[in-house]
Amino acid sequence: MRIVLANPRGFCAGVHMAIDVVQQLLELCPGEDIYVYHEIVHNKHVVHRFRERGVAFVEDIDEVPEGKIVVFSAHGVSPAVRQAAAERNLTSVDATCPLVTKVHMEAIRYARQGYQILLVGHADHQEIVGTRGEAPDSIQVVERPDDIPNLNIIDPNKLAYLTQTTLSTDDADVIISALKRAFPNIKEPPGGDICYATTNRQRAVRQIAPECDLTLVIGSRNSSNSVRLTEISQNVGTPARLLDDVSELQDDWFTGIERVLVTAGASAPEDLVAGVVRRLVETYSAEIEIADVFDEDVEFAIPATLKRIMRENGVDPSQRKIRFTKPDITESLYGAVPLTVSAGHH
Picture 1 (cartoon, rainbow, N blue to C red):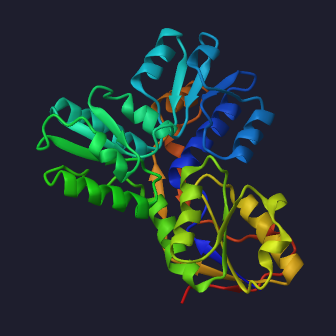
Picture 2 (spheres, rainbow, N blue to C red; picture 1 turned 120 degrees about the horizontal axis):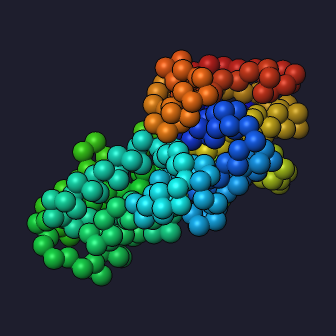
């Protein structure tokens, strides 16, 4: 068996930033109760590891005792949640991915200009809930082309669309094309809203999966971008399995399988990928090929409230940058299992 390990995979810069925020608060505020509104990222292992360190995750801001620290998750929150936190005198640390914040700002701008906004995405996803809260009277959610005839459109020449950042580009293109056919003058977001990391991971799967017999996506089932990776693989004709970790591997998946693409959703830690790869190497004497499709090297600023907390604790924020680069295969992650690695993708 040959394993084709996709790069990029796993943590994106926004997820890395959000997780780093909670880790730094735990270090800066020992003994303090740290609360996170919603799961910090959609990965059960990340959440479980923080719970073991005493972090509490809540779905209602009223669950946070007055005066405590609360972190807003990477998915963003509505102004109503921010206001509720302020009324409870909470120290709010905003770990919203800057690319999600971009969509929030676009929603505010279009609403102020008198546009109706068609928000493409999954209505129950936290990102959509937060974005919709920025301009609830101006936003309608479009989950599929069939929703378009039921929209309440006041002026078809005063329309704009935005999208959830973690959508499948395939699905988004279908919906956006249908919107443009229905409303030829609809405005589109500058530069697009689907984040670079989501797009890069999907393009890597789209490029590599046709050459493989099976795709394994490491990620949680409530991770939109992880689910989308499995769909992309299936769209190009390669069966795909979504699994949280090595414990979910099943031997019958690999009957007759010679090439396996391994990737991970943007909220999946690299050690989970390593665990799956180790098992395949040990069980099937698999060799590993690294498929470098895109390079990522991104920096996000530390949230302002965290900077203040750092200064109060004698830490210079200028000495800390949240920087993300592609994951490496290292001995510390992959253990003593011998790896045959072929860099590059052809």
